[in-house]
Image (cartoon, rainbow, N blue to C red; front, side):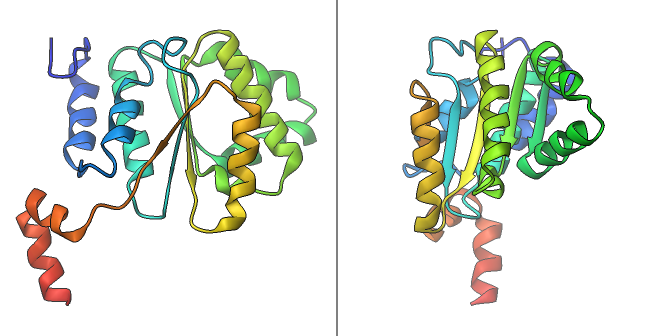
Length: 198
């Protein structure tokens, strides 16, 4: 067994560990880091789906991609999908009258889903309803779902409230940007670059 207690495939294991190695884990984001790395193991026991919330540049996308690589390394058919791409696929399915095929793709072909940048769908009620439908279809099959949300302004509070009311049993992990001192402890070369920029 490896350090994450997962039977990893060699090709994707290296990629997953590279993604994880680049993350700076400090007290402000330790909870989100821990939750993201175990999100695909036992989704029903852990409060599926997982929402990672934080400011721009805090590492949400990188953390989600590391979790995705771990799921793939464990043999899961996992897909990473930016919210804008989800919207595009949904609109194309509406135009082509192929909504059943669109929905079946998520129901039958995926073991795990990472949906990034939920904030891109803020104010698009019909698309959010399709997101709700898709996530519930995966939850009914006990499939893990991880979603990221950038919350930089108070107007995004509406989207977070929608999430809480729609997915009552979900986990919400907040991630914050580490202080520059933490970056210097983790990566001396980074602190040199920061000092040169100052």
